[in-house]
Image (tube, rainbow, N blue to C red; front, side, top):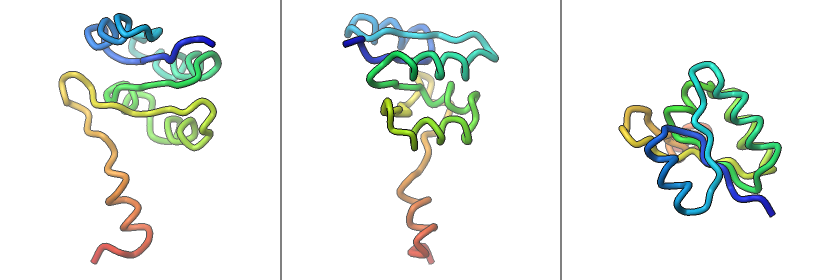
Length: 98
């Protein structure tokens, strides 16, 4: 079985490579291609939040909803890109925020 794939910055990718993951550090504009490549070959894909922001919410959401392979958004090293607040969004959609 191939290893999981991390998509993100070079420094974090170095750590994930040490842990045995394949890594992709996409050039600007190549983020969606990197995500598609990773999803075609990996059993799990981890995407840093900064890369996910550059890909765009619709494309990332499609991959997350597909569930094959599982795609997870993780914090970026600099903390520049916020993680999606799924709990707040879900409460709002259910009408529980008031």
